[in-house]
Length: 174
Image (tube, rainbow, N blue to C red):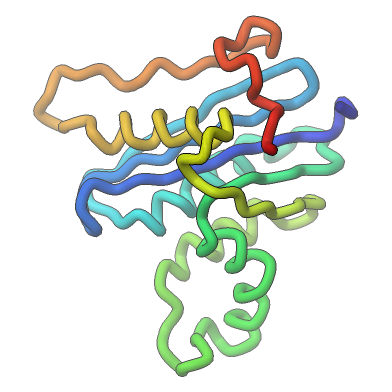
């Protein structure tokens, strides 16, 4: 993998829709892996899917990047970024049905985080054994399951070298 080439996996989850939610992201740059995650107490699945991508791309802000491949199991995120967002912007953030675009705040934030980056947005099937997607789902659901009144600890996120990462087949997306 080219040192400037970056692989990202993202996922989001909500317990109830709306309800408590979480997101997860894995960023692989050369031989380095960084896991990210977070939560919101009252949110939707789509918002958490967007937050996974936002967190990953904002993490890269200020870093020298060349090519990014972002894998998500969210059709909403992938089609939003590859087909819908440009049209929404042209239409004053209205859908084809003249309704206000939901989650406009996060779409604008994602567009800003993606600005100036060459990104391939790839949709993958969720819960089909793709290691990066499965791990992001674990992170997202663990954050979604955190209770504000509980003593449950947030999931442990990895940051380190690829060879020490517990998920051995992380780069296999087939």
